Length: 493
Ligand code: NAD
Image: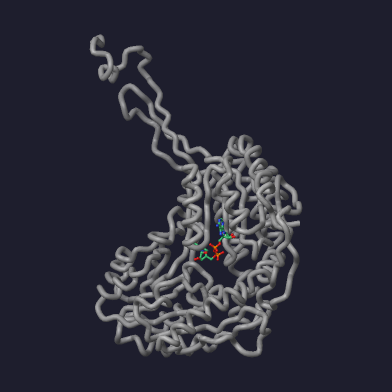
């Protein structure tokens, strides 16, 4: 059963979809996907649950979220197994990164639920007292991608419900398992039926029905920039609020005083994490010319040592990509770069000795590309790093900013002033100095430019799921008010 509506599992009415394990190419199970009538039911359940949940005290919501964190902990092994089976990522990654990260998120939002901030109440006019209320928005319609299914579900669900909203989430139809399990864990944690609902189905059908539903007050989305723009367009028809976490093309800027070994190791880890299917992954390395050759040589050496294969084997470093369709899309970028004269320093092939129907691709480093090449400008979303040299600091920073995206970036230097300059001049929602990838529940994640707007994680995301209301109370108690002179010429003095 693959829909979770009003506290229980049920079948969808929208036909069938085969779920494939991309690391084997074999079918895992058959999904009965949702149709728009299932979306109606899920939204109705969320709408019915809203009055009760939005009026629960922060302490009650906090307690429920602490219980959810505990329920997720009880299911840690199952969550990791399903995450790996449906995405092809290593079990090591699911176990050590995805599951604990999501539990930590639940613990953070359990605390944050009790800590909404606002301006102090006071007499900003002598005749009135003003105060600010932060209120839940209503039913949130959320849509999440396949690369980190559990963490993306956590990033969408937790701040929304911590702030008193109810939610209907549509995960990617390729990877619904751990999102459904999270909804089940929430029910077992005592979160009331209808607060969290999950509908599984295709974006065009179920996703669009959710965004355009008359009872959905806000759409939050993580996924590609193209689909994000479609969601914005659909939401604009009803003037609804949107919260968009979109694609990325993170630069990795290495200045000539950097520690080359640290930068090379950082570049390999940050470009290959999750098979490179990470919106913040390092994708474009720019290296100041004196360090270029040493950096490229060391990155190629380290990439060639990465073991690609069975994601359940503890010896494996990188599992498969999400599907053979996506693998072929990634390979297409490399093939076109090669045909255009670029140098594939390492990788650029489907590794031998692995199942032909599985979606593996080798860690790939490319040099010799121009800044305007598609492999430098477009999101490949695979285990691919491009490396280009630069001369002056100004040029490096200019190149780092020269794509439509602005999600994340890093700068590598031992000079504090250079690091500080990079942190302010790079247009991205996150800039790391001498590292690239770590994230924290307490800190915001989100984009600039074509990478979207709105923040995930942190108290900023909690605020994103609230309406701000100004309440202004007359404290004089007279029928004639000072400002009435704008209308009553004969006003008494
Ligand atoms: P995608 O945009 O193809 O799909 C994302 C979700 O949208 C899926 O659930 C899909 O079914 C749904 N969808 C597709 N078409 C839709 C439509 N017309 N209406 C409504 N919903 C629709 O993205 P993907 O391939 O699943 O994920 C990869 C993308 O996600 C990359 O671009 C990556 O950078 C981005 N991403 C961004 C972040 C971030 O925090 N900024 C995090 C993870 C992934």
